[in-house]
Amino acid sequence: PGSIGEVSTLMILIGGAIILFGRVASWRIVAGVMLGMVLTATLFNFIGSDTNPMFSMPWYWHLVLGGFAFGMMFMATDPVSASFTDRGKWCYGALIGVMCVLIRVVNPAYPEGMMLAILFANLFAPLFDYLVVRANIKRRKARG
Image (cartoon, rainbow, N blue to C red; front, side):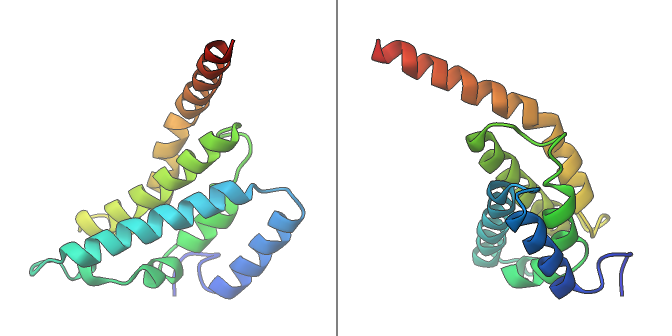
């Protein structure tokens, strides 16, 4: 059980594959979310905790629990609020994955962190684009 849209992760992934192959959603954001989630969950598995059992939850459980798959495929890939640059999309997605696991594991009062992580990353999306563009300008000026 869960919220509407969270019940069938398989159907969410099929729908996500359709919008990825149709180029409606960016695969860089989805890959960044997965990469951030896997790395953070693995880090928490290595750290471990005697008082918090969420530290030992494997990364693939994060994919199927709560709204992670739905948020990763349909909400994080919103082209209006996400980053526009390719590197910015990677950073945006990774921030969502890291923040979602961080909120789920560390904060026991808020067991589902996907929407909060997306909102938090939306605040930083323009900053990611700005930094990427500034780095490109600096690199081009250095080349001559």
